[in-house]
Image (tube, rainbow over all chains, first blue to last red):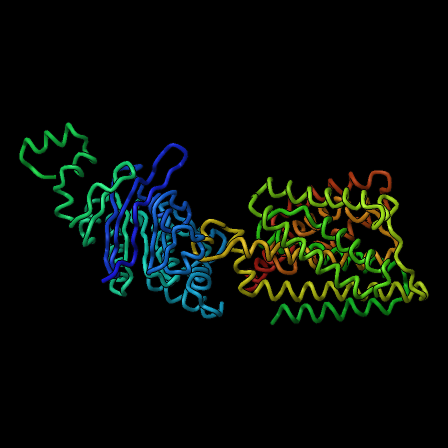
Length: 252
Length: 310
């Protein structure tokens, strides 16, 4: 099957800093891919490159057969790439329903606002915000704002969905709910790239894990293989501890 | 639906005022309609979209001069007015593309400079505009009361048109996009809102009706000069009216225009020497005590009463 998203030698520099360094990567339709790496590895920057917020300074991004390297963010969104933000970005004074409807009306190409509002109500119920559709978004708790982000991006009817730390700051029970929700989204045929710090979460849900370090791709494999990859262990623990660990003969 | 009903009733009530032959009352009415047009126009870009524009005077003056120049070339008044709207709107679309890249204070300053630049252009193009001498507009051969009634009805008609467009925008996709941009522009982009196009549209909308208002104003007072039509107060007053009435609300700008005109008249009559200072203090007081504007405050008070009755 041909890839949904292809990154070909993609780099992004900010002045002298290469936040993403020569990354090549293919994502097939229907996959759930975990994207991990230490703080500052370039995970969020990679999402920004694909969604057009910070376009690549070198290389090519091809999505669904189209070169989107230089496309504007709103055009990429309309083409089927949705993302949530690590720091949630609701429209604070709009209701939950209006927040979600914006995704449907603009990226989701629903012609009538009325219909977008109606579908927003259904999506809100789907992520467990059904009782709160008419509340302003700024009254929601963090866990609910994260779900709102999710509902907003679902309203866009994406082919590819980037989830940027949707589980950060949630308690274990909330994380279980969020994971169940992500699985349901994947079952609807949406390809998902999950950026996550919590190893348990990524390993549990991803079919494949991609690891970034200092902007470069250092591993791209099944979860088990990635966890035993020497480079990955070094990236997370440092060379000294990684060596000590392998001397003891244990895995992570 | 409710909004169209309010517009219909309002039009009828204000239309009846035209029957009065009192020229003072008609002058006030014409000013009120003009203020309402400018305030609603500003609300498209400043209120709904959240870009604090100080370009209203630029559009007002550009409209006034476009119409005056065409009428000096023997074109009919109506052609001058229509052209004023088109030129002001087209100019806003052109200038909007570069300056709407700026945000906040930077955008405010850039928009402020547009009027100043246009004023200098008009000042120095003496062959066409008469420069600082200003331009006379053709006198109508009608009795003064009839003229007062006619200009009142024209300005009222423009206000009704502006309100009708505002209602359509407010409930439509356009207004929804404006509000998304006002709330969080980056998030709006990622949700598929083409922010550049929508911002430019908001700026264009704010210019069209201001331009026509300037053109009607020119014929109404028969004489325009750069210092008058490009006066910075034409940019500041609409902003104050919208703040008084309720930022981004539909009818707030009209409320604001009524209150502002009432204040201006009352203060101007009673404190001729220091009227600007007194007006300033009143405005500061109102913005301090009614920070979300009259329209929003009325709604809150009404809700409280309804809550008690229930």
